[in-house]
Image (tube, rainbow, N blue to C red; front, side):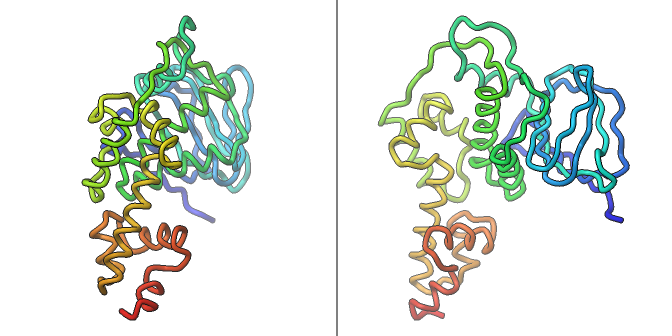
Length: 275
């Protein structure tokens, strides 16, 4: 029988957010609440939980959503248990995203209106936050977290109260690009980047994507691949090239390199006559 595993942790690029990566089979959560939101992406099996007066079932490819201070339970809905990736963002984290999305005049704390949401795309976003945090990619983790919360609030929640939307201009985008180019190895998070150029995260994200067709973290990885190609052209081994442009390891470089260039970095280097 498969073993139960669980890791509950926090990454410095995601202040106010706890993460849980777990596989449960026999484990049962008694009645309890969290002072945070719960965004649980089910990747295998089925989780059942008592919430809002009824038993909810969240299967693979769906999200289980719990609002702060809301009583609920948790247990397996199948004999084989369930596996999930969970984000526990603090109220302040969700409120900061909601503030940039909300319609002026609408009051109240942001919240989720549905307990279970079948949405493989959102499950992939949550998984992306975990993967980015695991490889210490703070810019990607912060960006994907904010996108996850924003999409959930827009489609399955209430944004709460907020002010008028602001915009980031071309100068902010240009400065953000310069900062990312200068800090390939240790880039700032999206929140830090926005603060450095004098705007908010979502206005910067929108303006950057409008200008370059990619969000900042994806654009940064394109620049890393370009720099890696130059290094490979001069005979630098792929593992060393990966480290020098800010990728965690050669596998991380290979994944992005192959998606952009079409071949792995080792094959690229051999064909350049440097193998």
